[in-house]
Amino acid sequence: MKVTVNFGETRVVVPCKDSWMVRDLIDQATQRFKKIVEQDGEFLVRTHHVEYVEGGILDPDDMLTDLVEDKEK
Image (cartoon, rainbow, N blue to C red; front, side, top):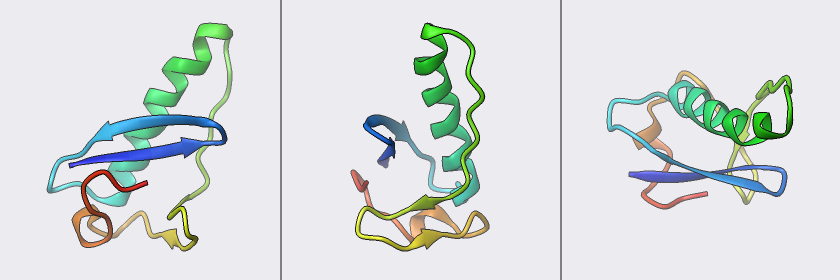
């Protein structure tokens, strides 16, 4: 499964494992985003929450497969 995560106008695609929690998606997406922005210097990146494009915040303790489908944003 792949999920697209938006950080403002920057989007990162994260391949996800079936056993992942939302917290794992947050960690991986943040790491990938940091790789992109650190090319322009050092930045502090802190992800406060993840939400659906249509709205609704995902709980970090939930199983990712219970909440999102392949290629979801």
